[in-house]
Structures are given as C-alpha cells and as structure tokens.
Length: 499
Image (cartoon, rainbow, N blue to C red; front, side, top):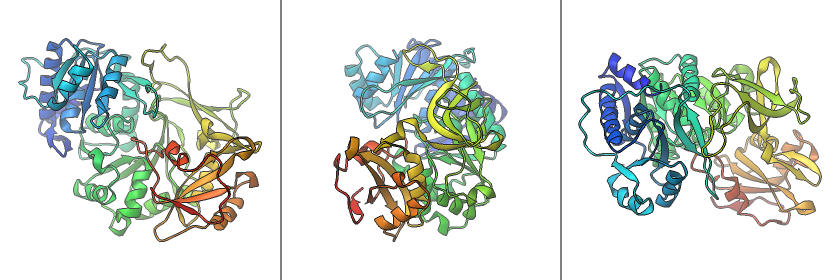
C-alpha cells in the first residue's frame, strides 16, 4: 500500500535521491533502511496493526521516515506540527487513543507529564536495521493516517483516510502529471495538510525525489523563489497565496522561467485570475487547479487553457478525477443543470472513512461548497455555504464579492465579510493593494457595480498591509473581522489596518 511506493523504489534504485530537507537527505535505500529500523523499534514498544502513532516533529527526512515506519506496521500515523503546543498534541493523542508518540528527545519529558504511561520514541535515535524487512500485509481499506482539521476553538475533528483513499488520488496524480524518476517535487504544505499527500506519495510512486520546504520559510517570498531555482523543482504544488507572494514580493516574474519547471499546481482557495494570467505569461509549465476538501482529497481538477485567461473570475475547479463521481445538488434536491448552482457532492474511492470517534462515513460527502455547473461536467466554484449570508434581506455569496474586487487592477487580494446584525449588518471588504497602488472606495464600488447587483456592492473598504493566514495558508477570516467593530460607520476613504 502507501509504504510499498518506497519499498518498490528502493528495490529498483536504492541510490536514487528520495527526500531532502534542511537537516539532510535520504536516498531510497537509506529511507527504506531508516523506516525499517524505526518500525522494528515501534513494534518492540507494542505498536500493532491498526494502532495510531502521533508524529510530533519538524518537517524533515527523519519525519517522513517515521511516517513510513508506522505504515509498515499496518498502523496509522497522526502528524502534528512541532510548533503545536504540547497540551494540544496530548489532547490529540488521547482523542485517537494513540499507542505511541514519535518526537524529538527534548519533548519526551513534557509528553511523559501530559500523557502518563504513553510510549515515546526519539525521532533521531540511531537504530540498527532489523534482521528482516518490516512490511505487514495491509488491507486497502485500512486506516493509513488521521489529519486533524485546524480550528480556533474546541477539539478539531480527525479525518480518517485509508490506504485506498490516498492511493486513488496519488495514482491519478502520477498519471496526470506523467511523473518520472527525473522529477523533483517541492513540498510546500505542512505534513498535517492534505496537499502534502501529493508531494510525498506521487514522488515515491514514480521514484522521483521530494524536497521539503521548512515551515518557517513557507511565506518567505525571496527564499521560496530561490528554492524553486536552486532545487531545480519540476513540480510545484501550493496554496495560491504562496504563489501570489512569490510573484508579488519574491521577484519571481523578474527572472526567466526555469526550464526544469514543468507543472504548477494550486489548491485550497480561489486563485485571482490576474495572478493566473501573470503565471501563464511567465512559464510554459502546465497549470492545474485542484479542488477537494480534506475529507475527499482532490476530487476535481482543471487544466488551465487560453480560454480561461480571458475570464474575469477564477478558473473553474473542473471535472471529476481520482475515480470519483461529483455533482451539484440544488436546494430542492435535484441535480443542478448547466448554468445552475448547488452544493457539490462527492462519491468514490477518495471519500474518507469518517471522523475519528464518530460513526463511519457512508455514501456521498457533502462538501458545503456551492458551485455552478458548466458544460461537459465542469464546475465553477462560487463559495462556501457557510459564507452565504443575508444583508438587509438579500442573499449574498461572499465569494462572488471577492471575485469582483480581485478583478480590479489595483487589488492583489480581497476578502469580504459581514459585520453587525439585522438591519445594522454591513458588507465589508479587506483589500490587499498591489505594490504602489492605493485603490479608493469609490473606484472599487464603481468597479463592483459593473459586475454585481447593487446589494452586493460593499459598504466599506479597509486596505490591509497583509492578510492573516491560518496554519494551512488560507485566509483567517475570523482574525480580519475581529479588527473592525461589530457595527462601524460608513467610511469615505479606505482605512489602513496594519497586518
């Protein structure tokens, strides 16, 4: 199953580069041996097939080896970022009833205090390989990993993904990309984020190498651009905000596009169409827009073509992939026809097993995303159902407002929100200007009025120095709306909110 990708690649070419990071690198043979050694140690600690093992560590080749070790035992790994507080990690471990925690030696005393009796393993301990390779037989439907969704309050939900779920997406991605051992995948996303599944496993499935970007550099534009060139990356996959930052503040567009870059993939949030145009004009690499929540991984995709660059909206999220079936359901329960909107439903091999500790998931998964059905089974993202709001009696989709604002030439990114309640509710926009620009309220209102009904034109505009992000790189809407009073008076000029 997932660990077989590494085992098979190591058997075919043990000396081929597999994974590289700031702390060093492993060839496939080295990764195979390290995973075996750690798997044998975890087995001695009592980890059995079906158990859960939390991996609390920085992104590194050693961490990737730990993930492989857990999978070789027929167990499931639960990744946790090293900067996550120990108490939160302990809560995750208790929630999923983890058998053991793999982490750095410096964290073991804290875990012993927070989780009395928990088995721990030093991620960096020198270990001898076992006499025989570790490779437990695993059913494709068995749990492979749990990704805890981020959340600002309460305990996040643990999304349970099977080997079959992950492999359906990985095998599709390898085929779509035509990945080969010569490829060099960048890993921008945290290992707790489902985007990293493609980076790691598509690389291993094709015998390619994956190059880890440390979390602290995830939004350092100059360093990211240097990384792209210095590591000779051929496949880049990230949230659009990272690419926008590289273009806007990293000087990427001022350098010749690297010949080794052949595919740029983005997912997680809409990508402003003007940024896509700039990217397409800079590189001849294939551009792919991938879509799917953590609960389904990638279930639709769209290959950007010339016709998309003539749009004034983000490119479509595309048609079904990974063996899934997707459709839009209208509010009356009927399937949405061409031109109609509805909630996107997904059924197929990538749909999760369920949330840990809750009844298993069966049947289609409701994404909560509203889409518009286009021709030929293609869908266009409209917005979140929970971003569908009422302002003075009118239904407003915040995604539509943001798309209109982002199409203005002075705007790099825009986020819309509603503040206040009832008749006091006001539609507010937070705008990140382009370098050297200062979009005015009246200009933005005129621009929006040409594209939207009057009730969807924002009441207020706040220019921001930067847009706050969650750990996964998405816009933190709660942090933005907390900056303005629940009911602020109308403004005649854009106020500046420091980022």
